[in-house]
Structure formats: C-alpha cells, structure tokens
Length: 376
Image (cartoon, rainbow, N blue to C red):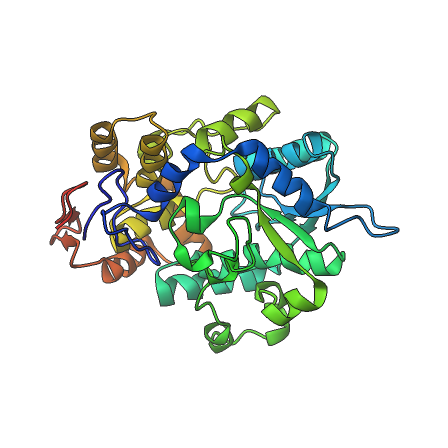
C-alpha cells in the first residue's frame, strides 16, 4: 500500500494507477487544470450541445439524473439558468424505509423551482431481496441498488427519446477510476466500466430466484443500445473550473438544498452535504475503508488538499479520526430492513476486512496496520 505524494489517495483504490512520480490520477489531473482556458472549454460545450438540437415536438433538451443532492441540484440549476436549456430530471426513488425526509424535501424543492421530474420506482420487495443478497454475497448492499440507480437515467433517456445525458464529475479524472475514461475528458459513455458497475452481471441476481422480468430496472443499456438510440453521456464537471464538494454544496444550499446536521462521528461527512437522500451509504463508506484502506473522509480531504484548502498534515489527522465513522443507529436500521441482527452484520464485515491492511482483535475491534500517508 502506497500513498500519493501530494494527497492522501492510496493505490488500493480500484482501477487507479499512479504516475512514475508517485502522483495519483486525480492530483495529476488537478495540476493540469492550472493551464486550462475555461472560456475555451465553455465554447467546446456550446459546440457539443449544438449537435443535439431539440427534436420537433420534443419538450426537453437533455436528461439529468438527480437524487436531491448537491451535485445533481447544481447541475440542474446551471444547465437551466446558465445554458438556457430545458432538462428533464430523472430520479430513482428509494423505498420508504431507506429514503430520508431530507431527500424527499430536496426533490420537492427541485419541483418547486420549476423543474420537470420523472420518477423511477423499482419494486420494493425485489429491491429489499437484492439488497440482502448483495450484502450476503459481496458485503456491499449497494451492488444491486447502484446498478438500478445508474441504469435508470439511460433507460429513461431511451424511453423519452432524449439522446443527451448530462452527468456530474468524471470519475476517471476527478477520482482516479481510470476504466471510465472515454475518448475525451467529457465523454461519459464508458461510465459503465466504473468500479461500481463493472462486473455487475445479473447472474447472481438470477441465482437469488428473482424473476428476470423484475430485473429490468437493473439492466444498464448495452453499448449497442447506446448506439441505436444515439445516447451520449457528457461529464459537466469537465467544463466547470469550480466543481467541488464544497462549491456544489454552497450553490445548491443557496437555492434551498437541505443539508445534514448530523455529527461527523456518525457519518464521516465533514461538510454535511453527501448522500442527503439516505443514510445507509455511510455503512458502505465504512466497509470500503475496511476493504481498501480509505473512506469518505479520505475523499473529502483529498479534494481539499488539491484545492489548497487543507494542509496534508491536517488531512491526516481527520482521516485517522473519522475515516471509519458510522452511526450504530444507521447500522441497526439497515439490519432491521434486510432482516439480520447486528452480530450477523459484523460477522459479515469481519469476513470481508482486508487482513493485509487491518487486524481484527478478539473483542471485534478493527485496527489498521498501515500509517496514513505512509502505507505499509
């Protein structure tokens, strides 16, 4: 395990490769942004959008996936108010046991701001069953739900015959998931290969004795379907020089976004602006930490370090203190939903802990072997 010499990104992040100088892809990309002509990029965007004129009788110029979070809210506002476009917002709704009131309020705010929102709602019984199967099989309850979440937008784009899909950040450039890189910095059609989606074939879902017809919401359109319908995903973050966790949160909060008021100890959310529509992602961030040695706080600090808003030593202290944060209340609610007890939860987590990076003590406590910013 090695760390980026600039930020706190470890090389254990899936699909990442450091430069010969020991710099992670995200820091390498950020350094190159200093020479970017943002006006030129804006003109590139204008030329790109001109290739997707609104069809006769069509009401929308593009489609944007939204959750009621900071990134999607900012995208919707910028596309409408800066670009003068009319987007259709696509939202995958969670079951009542999972969605937060805050998330519901934020989607309602988008509607009140004048946006058209179409909702996609997978069958809740199948959703619950697949969530349990995902956790049991992969110690990743979101293996199925994220597939549905990412699939819903291109599915709805096909349904409403809207070829242009606007997305947020480029995970290849801004996070380091290199398999998602496309032909250009804004080409998002390789999003299907990101770590969240890659290898997410439906075979294991079928083994869970689920009717194939009930898996339609979980099927990401194939490359042939993208070609047939002329779909193009465009990363808007590539065109915005001020795209960041903090800035997106500030812009969106100014337009009515409701943020978290929870403690960092419960969420690992340093700014209170992540995963606003549900709380269980916090569990996956904790489990990600135990699998790969980095969690939500690492991602927060990395961005702040790159932007010059945080010293690396201060980031180290925050990562050491909070990177495995997760509220017992969130864990209990999740366990109740998939019908297991907390002992079963921790037994599953312990079985998935990366033993090269962590030691599990007899009392169940998990201790890291590595030193943050140093490695093993």
